[in-house]
Length: 197
Image (cartoon, rainbow, N blue to C red; front, side, top):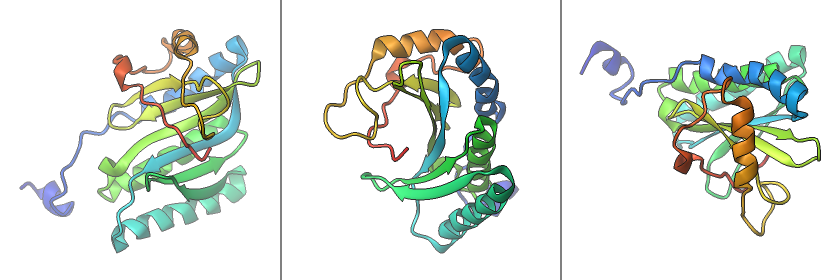
């Protein structure tokens, strides 16, 4: 066991993806908005698997307080929710997409610094297209890659049929492939049904 492993309490340290992969959304959004009329809904979430330990809960609570504090300056508000699979969502609301990216990154960083980076599953940014249909961009932390998720009808949070519009997902992939690191293996484009955003 190395020195860093000892500091992290023996937790396995995963190689973290470069942070610029998450921040790529800030520039890709300009293309989505100006070239394709896909606009932010002003909401994003980061989902992670919570642990029932005092240390983990302390980090999550502290991060929530920091975001609430900085939100007074940026206008970002935060809520939390647990989904039906017992995953925790930190949901950020802000009309400025860059503020959402910075906030999501702050939560992911805090969990990683605390030694819980392997508990973070994904970040999700919600958009609508010119016809008002939902479009989600999902960032898979473990893979360091993005992919689009387009429910066939309604929103991903609605109960009922869980079908996706694969053709539309491919069109959106083509729109941003030069600006976002897109997940190359499409079988890893996992849908996230029942999202609280």
